[in-house]
Image (cartoon, rainbow over all chains, first blue to last red; front, side):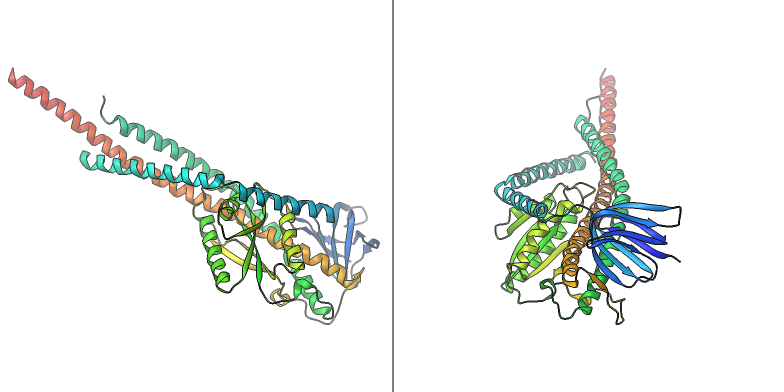
Length: 138
Length: 288
């Protein structure tokens, strides 16, 4: 008997296929899921997920946390694509904020716009001159 | 011969431009395939999560996460996803136009707006607008953005929502319809309307929760929001490459046309010069 296993992260599909059993590092301890397991949801700790396809063959995957969802014929692991911790998230938020402030104080893009406009004007004038030349030539 | 020196240089410079646009077109075409694959790859995650959240929201009617409760709207948060680079046709300007229309609507309703931007183009655009209150920004994510890169700005918005500073959260990005068509799209992220998520899990069973339903739901909702924004970002990337490919193709075609016309003008001028020279010689010979 087998159960279908999907391991997905936000960035990509990592594994999809049938397995005899799945082992995962749940938050309250390692779990092994056999086919026809009762529906269950749990958080995962960072660790190794092992998909046992047959007695001789099994695939290990590293997850840095996530969610494990179990239905009788389907096991889904929603893996985090990065190590998550409150202070790391906090630092990222602060960084994004400071970048916004920088962008507000730095008005170079306005200057870029002005240069682009000047260049556009120049090109238009050139084309107009060419047009006149063409009329005279033709 | 001194005839049409300017025209010849002009033709040369247009040829050079054409070479560049053609190269950019080919680069964009090959990148487009990769970004499209990446776009496909992100779908199962958020779809799966949507299903679980819907199920949880229905199964646990007694526990309502703040993300699921609609409230009176006084201020909204907006995450605008743009590309990092230009030369991709009207992709970004269409998106910004749509965003401004939306902003005006909110302004009319007396709703204030906080903006977070992804991509340097949006940062440049909204940074220069006086009225816009920009609270976060990321850019220069490259062709393979990672979820890590955008966690920061999402956290800013989620914190604002939890603390009641914003009452709704939207993401505005381009939707990839096909290679020729990209559509700016406004999507509401918060509050999550559980009924919106497609229902496949009808039935009266419930999960076993470890450690408990609240904990799992909290965790899932944050991830869900992140995955939707990330998907928007990846999709916007695919749009960027497609739009650039089309824009560069038409630029190359236009350059070709221009070269043809200039060549004609040049040939005529040359011919006229030769004819004039001959008639001068003939006239000179006749005079002798």
